Length: 153
Image (cartoon, rainbow, N blue to C red):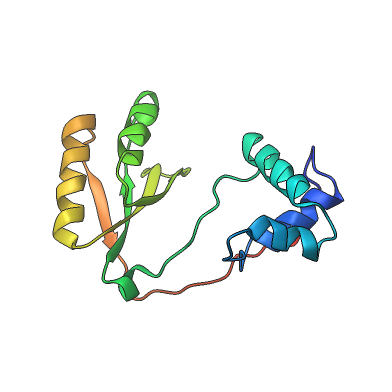
C-alpha cells in the first residue's frame, strides 16, 4: 500500500507505534533509538502525520468490561443535511469512542462506553432530544471479540 506524502521513515514510525506504544516517560526517544533516528525527528514526523490526518489519534484502547464499564454499538438514521450536527452532538460525549458514516439505511454508527446501560440510554435520549433524530438503535455486545488491527505499511 502506498500512502501519499509519506516516506519510508514515516512508514517505519507508523509500523512501530500502532501497537505496543512505549509506556515510558519518553516514548518517542525509545522509538527513535529502535529506528536509529533522533527523538525530535520522530516527534516532528508524528506531529506532521497527525496534522495531515494520517494519524487520527494516539491513545490507549481499554477493555471496558474489565474496568467495570458497559459498551454498546449504536446506529442512527440521519438525514444527509443533519449529519454534521448529529455527529457534533454525539462527539461531545466522552464515552463515544468511534463515530462513522456507513452506506446503509442506518448511516451513522458509533460506540458508546459508560458505567451503566442506564447512563448510555439517558445519553442517547439527550442526543435524540437535541438533534431531532427519531431513533437510535442500541446494540449492546453479547460477546466481545477483540482483534488486533496492525497494518504493515
